[in-house]
Image (cartoon, rainbow, N blue to C red; front, side, top):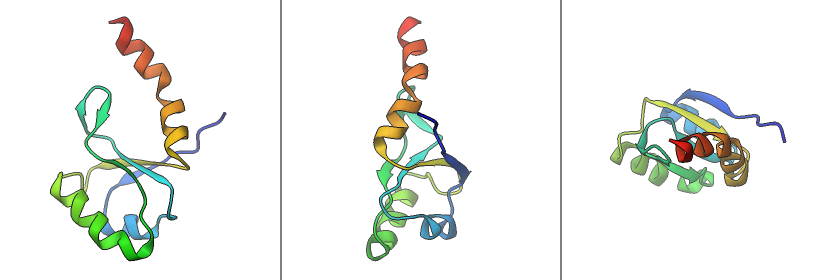
Length: 87
């Protein structure tokens, strides 16, 4: 399966331009396998609250990746997880 992730700085304008339901993942991580922020993009009604959550964990302004689904994100990161497990 080919991944079509979009990467960009996580700004409020960028968040509000994304399709609801896509999976938003920060490039910064709490641990090697746990992103600082990873959630489905909320509906337009929920975007303001989602933005507040992004700012609260300091993921705003940092690079993020957007996948079509959480499953696509997990599939694209299996190779990385395998390499971490080997170390």
